[in-house]
Length: 232
Image (cartoon, rainbow, N blue to C red; front, side):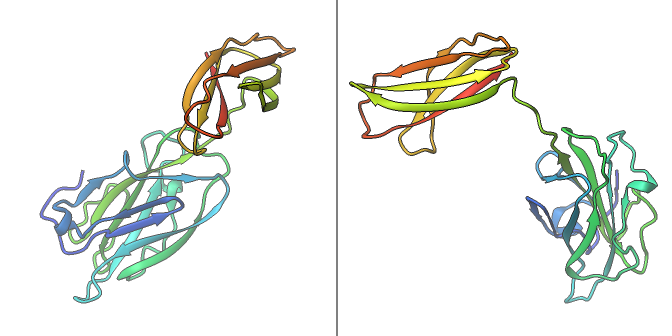
């Protein structure tokens, strides 16, 4: 890991997709290296173009920095040459600067992949992913590519109606497989739900028709309902 007295340069902010990180220079952070990989995570899609904004340098000094970025797309713990993101490492930057890049078609999915950003005084440069910048900083983040996980059933319908003092909830399924139970939840405002009962599934390819009666209707003039399915 990078060691030594922190310099006046450093990564002062990163914005990518749904992730934003704000920080100071290396001197302000007290370290040339900051690991944010467990707290700052960007959700990305494969084979997609993105713009990442990186805060660099100090325009009032002025201090201009160059920057390199790597993403461990195959999750093997090594930043290969092919995993370097082309961010124009020869650029001299101060302030927030946008860089464009595209993700590959087949990254590892459903795992946190390390993303490393390195900055340094542009007159010195950066030689690789393990570089120790004397007047810059190294910060690690994570990205994740989420693969769609199919439900272990087909939900055909979920309906409810008031019936003589209780709410009658009904749902129909097909192609059930390895479901632990159905959970019925309800809410007064459609935001905060609590469980009110469980139903055992049939777990067969034909599915089934299910019903649940909620007869404890005190405390609200109307209820929102939600059906959750938990697999084994």
